Image 1 (cartoon, one colour):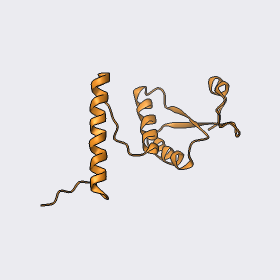
Image 2 (tube, helix red, strand yellow):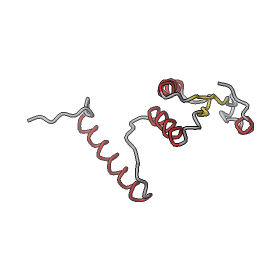
Image 3 (cartoon, one colour):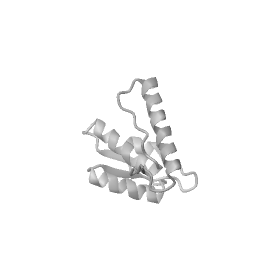
Image 4 (cartoon, one colour):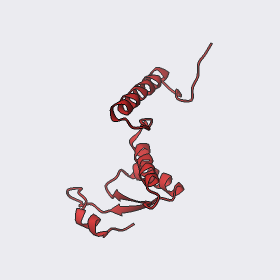
Length: 115
């Protein structure tokens, strides 16, 4: 007998251990917070970022714009662009200071950013 899942394309013991840990973590967070829905199923930061943008804009459909730092990793931004395009989410880029990497909060508050 052999047991196969879609979650174990390589190093099954590693994948199954990660899935078990994520499941345990999700259960504990739900119990601690009393939230009806908790997720921790994303393996990488880029997917988590994209999914969080989707969740935020889904919560209030009147808000479909997400501000994104120009300092975001380019490959993460590419994934974010793809996810958000498919869900009609508009991304607006906030420039950063080239030396400090900080965003100008005044520009964010006044809406002085570009797409």
